[in-house]
Image: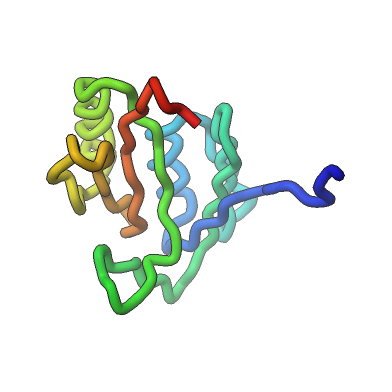
Length: 132
């Protein structure tokens, strides 16, 4: 039986929707489409739409913090080689991300960052033998 609903957007609260949409556009591609100062949509090529909405009282999640949920995070495939992951690492840092956990990457196959608004996201190494 086909589903009656489908995913429309992943919506991310932030203090500056256009700035954060531009950050993610530089990371994954696409062009931010601003409806107004409160809502910006990013149509990610070959991916879900990301939407950014203004939250005046926005408080970024703290990572890691065991006593409070981080709410969500985004995972991005960044390549199958460590050279590709290193290039993605340099790119996101140059765009304003902050490294949260880049240790033991060979054991975990991912590194954790915070976007300019403080949301955690991961750059993941693609296991070409076990792709989903």
